[in-house]
Image (cartoon, rainbow, N blue to C red; front, top):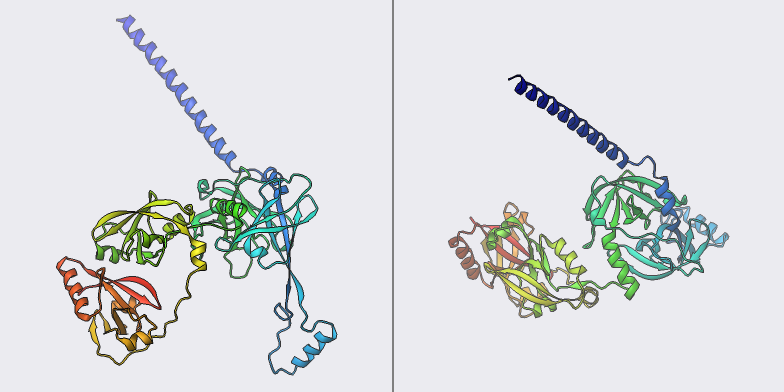
Length: 489
């Protein structure tokens, strides 16, 4: 019995020792993790700044502009001082002669043979572009190509020696809260460094291809075109814009994501221009009421409002189709589809899944080139709608009239145009809230073509019988189509 008790006591003591050792190891692990976390916050950016600065450049541009187009004394026409200022300018040899205007910006070298990236707005319209290097010296640059849609430009200098350069990083791996370093030439003060974090990603300002990294690293005028570095010394963005009420940094800056920039730069270097894929459709986002009206289970995809001559039309796409998938990528909204198509190779044949009349279909479409399509695009017609003297009917908060020759002429429509013209809209009705106005032409209802009030009423009745809460209308204004879903009473 004593032996058994002794054995139990020994085992209990051993268990206690093991537990104590385990707690010590756990404590050491926690301490190590905290130490590593503390090291994630750099004590200094000096090493990083020293490593990347030689590849960052100041850019000075000059342009000849007509006298009077730049800033100067503002004198109202007819003012008694008008002749005085004109005489003063003439006496000083100014008159109306052209003058040279200068601007400053930033950029960075991406290859040892002298390719340099900056913003398009930094060098746009410049007669001369001078590159100033961190370690001294200047070279004149040649513009290889520009892309106004992403505000990116590619320059080239000729150097007798290899140039220091920096690599691009993967902007998709940048996380909100990551440290970043902005380097550039703010306000013409020369090379300057500012640090901050990634405040947000995937910001869109106004362009179809926008993918901005938002940062609180100080960015000011003159920083445009400069690089935004991650902590590995890789460029994850090109500093492009700031949000500010006074023109100075308030901690909201935007850098075009490197994954957008690298594709643009590669095309500019290879072709001197961009080559984006083109599907050939006009689209709008799918709203909740539109999804309900056409029987979509999920509010997603891109609703096709028009299919002009082009790749999509050749492949059989129709107005009213909802693009659900493009080349194996699910389509969430129009912005995502535009970017995905733009990134696709010109001439590539892709599979596009569309939702049509309650089921999905797969189309094979060979992509064209967007730039070619835009250069051949006809100018948009102006809206010259007037209310015609025709018999009207009221429905869905709208006053409608069938198209006749007089209305076609007033609206500058072709002789084959059909539909119902909106002659007035009840401002208290849902139709007014959703943007319908006099002069709009309704050409489809329930994804069926209509030309008379009777055909519209038939689609209203059919939608109610099918249990729909709303009816989808295809509305055209000045030649531009869009879908609108109106609630049925």
